[in-house]
Length: 425
Image: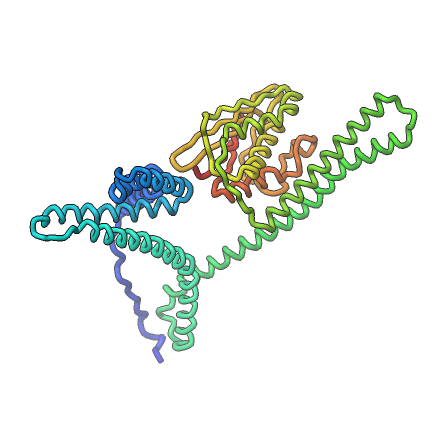
């Protein structure tokens, strides 16, 4: 058993390899550029064309065009296909070009053609490169996910083992306890976040009960009141009876819309969103959305300008994205000034399509911009009016956009409020 009276020995650790932050940033930038190149539609299309020229050639023009068309459809739709074409195609071409060089160099000394041999070897090499890439990425993600958990377990096991084997030797535990403390702090932070999430969820449920009672009771009370009045006053003039019936019908429609929104958010919460993708003309689609809101726009003396170039095609679930555009447009109309213009624009970047809804109205405070996409959240101004819904429209829009692999956010200033939707191109 070690004595505790002697001087404490200080553990030594190997020096960390020297690496400057600048060098690390350069490496990260290089990796990012290579990844962008591998994901690029332009690069993958160029590699595909070169590969087909080498393998098929222009002599078989019909086969060349058919393979090019099929390959372009796959490259345009799937990012993993683009990576395979770039990585595997470049490897294949490199081997074929090497074979061509060797064949030209030794053509006068051999009596067989080496083209097919290098073509086959290039194919195998390209497959190996793609397999190595995807296997390496899968192992990295798996290791990264489990690494910290295993590290925490190993540290705890190490400390317990030391205390069991050497209960009286505390001289070298300072550094170990620091590691344990760090691991415990991470666990505490995760528990704190989990408790905070539970408290927030409980608060939202309490708010939901309050807002649900208010939002459903208001139109229901109007329907009951006007129908009761019609039932009791049988001698009402025809014009007044028609007016009361119209108001009751409007409130009933609002009540129906609120209940439908609650059903929608329940479906999106408990079921995965299944997308049925297809190529959709965004300009035509958004013009249809604006046309559907023509009565509301006309009533408030507002207008919608669609500034989208012709031929902007997106691979999306048309029905579900129409719901997104509908909800965002409804929000823009509800919170814009009377007589103002709502501008809808879109553009295609290298890897995304960005759609913007811009309206002019009271600015949204910065703290509220962080929560407007939460379920059942509505701006205070909407609760005093009939403009807003149940606070589910933007939450549903966020769920659908996320299912497409995109993002939706909002920026607001005294001059304008802009909702930006970005989806993969």
